[in-house]
Amino acid sequence: MSTRTAQKSRDVSNDTRGMCTTLQNEKDGKVMHPDLINPNIKVAQYAVRGELYLRGEQLRQEGKEIIFTNVGNPHSLGGKPLTFTRQVISLCTAPFLLDHPDVEKLFAPDAIARAKKLTASFKGGIGAYTDSRGNSLIREEISNFIQKRDGIPSNHNHVFMTDGASVSIRMTLNALIRNSNDGILVPIPQYPLYSASISLNGGALIPYYLDEDNAWGLDMPGLKTAVQEARAAGKNVRGMVFINPGNPTGQCLTHANLCELVKFAYDEKIVLMADEVYQENIYQDEHPFVSAKKAASDMGAPYNEAVELFSFHSISKGTGGECGLRGGYMEMVNIHPDTVAQMYKCASINLCPNTVGQIAVSVLVNPPAPGDRSYDMHLNERKAELQSLRQRAHMVTDAFNTLEGVSCNFTEGSMYSFPKITLSAKAIEKAKSMQKAPDVFYCLRLLETTGISTVPGSGFGQKEGTFHLRTTILPREEVMDKFTKLFKTFHESFMDEFRD
Image 1 (cartoon, rainbow, N blue to C red):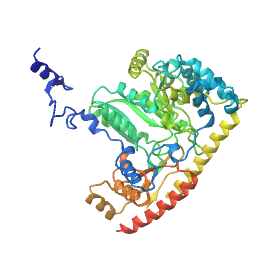
Image 2 (tube, rainbow, N blue to C red):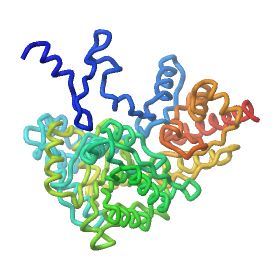
Image 3 (cartoon, rainbow, N blue to C red):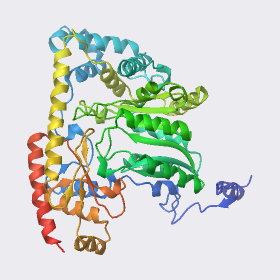
Image 4 (cartoon, one colour):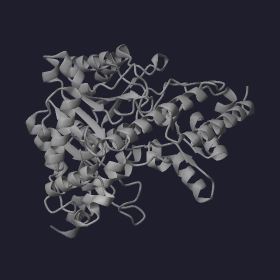
């Protein structure tokens, strides 16, 4: 083959209709010119680390104090790691400490015992690759955790650990989406991981709106309408995402809600994707966390045997908040065994999840037991953090609800509040003159004035004509008091400036 023919061959690709299209290979001397990269990359948006975050970073580098409430990153806002978790990680990453004569003076005996057991289970230590699904012993611990939580057996061979839950979610979407006609139902407001990942995989996001007037509850008639309209438009509705507790909305689904979703998935032949990473973050007693797997099991046949379910969990949330360690897992339920094998193949491309994250997952799902030296300390650390988070949830939502033109549902769970802000025609017109969405304009002014970094509601999706923002409830209580006062002062000034 001649050089010219080879070049022509490289420049020809097949479009989705099977027809040959010649694509431009370089522009301005660059093959990787931004006009020539995969268009799905350019379509994808991730508001949590978007314009507001970048401006906040710029202001921080210029010396302005910034309160980054834009992302659920507990340790960056003063959260502390759980002692037992870090003791086990320390010993596993430096196993020579296990042989140190003073090891028992520095570490709890149950942490030492756990580290020895885990270290022995990693062939070659944690610096070696593991099975692509993760360490088998830890996957068994995950299955035991699920069985204890739900009262239902779990197959550890259908549990895959990944570098945070996000990787599991992207793997699932990659397997579900075949072309641009494949649609995924996503709650609006939604976490932008889903919209961005669907875009990257070339699929279609099918929105279903949560009911803000009903504490961000499910709107089942609206959900059914969304499916009908998508199918009428030629879309194959393949999967449905739900986030419980909610992000950014903070609602907790009831057992009855979950049963409705399971029945809906069964009737419509849709795969369920249960984002359950905030299952420990519950700040009220009326709606405890219930897993989707538990709800399906309680319904009995045919639902528990037929509904295809992926569920996701992570070390990044909860009381540990170990975002940077990147540990998480997914469990596959009622998934065809040959598809599980294909997912294993895809996991193998990345070789294995990081081993420190795997160790943190081990402690998450298998914490110290009653009678262990670290049990009381570990339990008390978790209880104290949950109690503090509950207090901060009240502080934030109560503060928002005292402000003119602001309403906010109580944060029942997760790490966020999502207040609705009524903006004047004058403020909306000002935003348009600056070529900004109204809520982006509001959040930028908030950032510039107070140093509070939030995420505009338009980054999550919202009903036309409404405006929101998302803030975490993660600043410590003493900082939260400052946060609410700064917000109040700014909002009152903003409303006066743009009063119609």
